[in-house]
Image 1 (cartoon, rainbow, N blue to C red):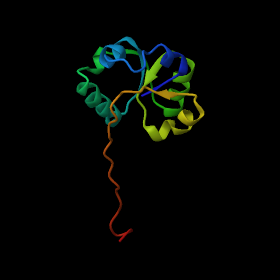
Image 2 (cartoon, helix red, strand yellow):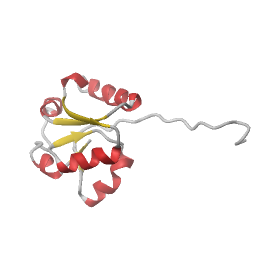
Image 3 (cartoon, rainbow, N blue to C red):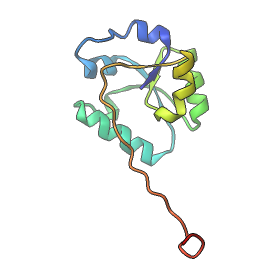
Image 4 (cartoon, rainbow, N blue to C red):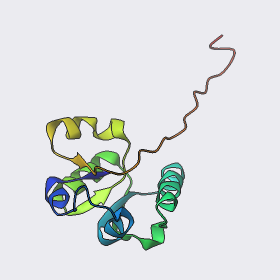
Length: 116
């Protein structure tokens, strides 16, 4: 989960009750991406939440735009670690500590005749 430093400072780091904390935050979700939405939904269910429980401020279709919106606002977002690695390293965004990591299953696809 990516958040900006101002939000993180007020996010009760290290305390229990993450589901309730997450319900109180404003969210930015990736728009029109069924795979991402399914992963987020599955993760939230492990916390006893549904997407409908969240205060969704906006939905954006571009990861770069989401990162910029999170940096500029008090919102949080769930984004792939690889997509925010630079921002985490630079300290522009921070990850919420204490949340369980979740895995996205990927498959490599190729045309068999082209790649033996």
